[in-house]
Image (cartoon, rainbow, N blue to C red; front, side, top):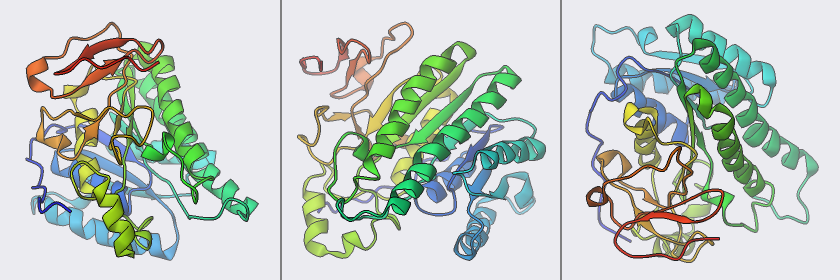
Length: 334
């Protein structure tokens, strides 16, 4: 286990005047993203469930956001919360409409809502399977579609960011109902990037590894298992939700204006997937935890300054051909 502690992100105001909407923003990774977006200058609309637990979480989120704002800024000028079950198509439509009513336009959409209840494959109840698919995949589809329609109507482009999972690339015995949904979210981003690129709408996915949230809290209470997981992570520690917020800020900002159809993955180990190249893409402090592989199909191929990159490989997403590599030649992934 590493003794290194990540510092807070610098306050860059990269997102000043931008309006962002996020699903599943009341807790975990989503909550951290909401607060960092606001720290960097954005106005944020948050979708959440309407149950008592979620409402309590939203109340405390409002308090935390209020503490981030100047005393003269009313909370409603920077934060909107909208209740609704994201698995239902009408929830996404209503959520985007409410965002436009409050903030007048939309610049960034983050599909984050997801559930994961570990369960044995052979005894998995059909209701659990259906609910996981409906929230994680159907919800991502409907909300992405609603946001894309708004971007199209505005005619000014936009950024869509989906929080997938490293589980999109690797299996898990207790996650047979969960991993296919995260693979689906990744595939959705690849496809909508192709469908929406002509309209200036950028679509990307982030695939977090082991991040300490309410989804795996019980699992990581097992010291032996936690130490095993930490031993497989190059940085020697599990991630925290704030580690994912930085890359979201980057992808939401104009610094990523030519980044499309990429996914950024925090791998569990150098041999954890066919895409086993470990890379560090850290030109900015906003990607402090991202040990990543970027698999990109750029339009046209983009040159990236090697001096800003350590151990980065980019592959054509369609052919698998190697486009660019920093430091050491790597055999192209077919």
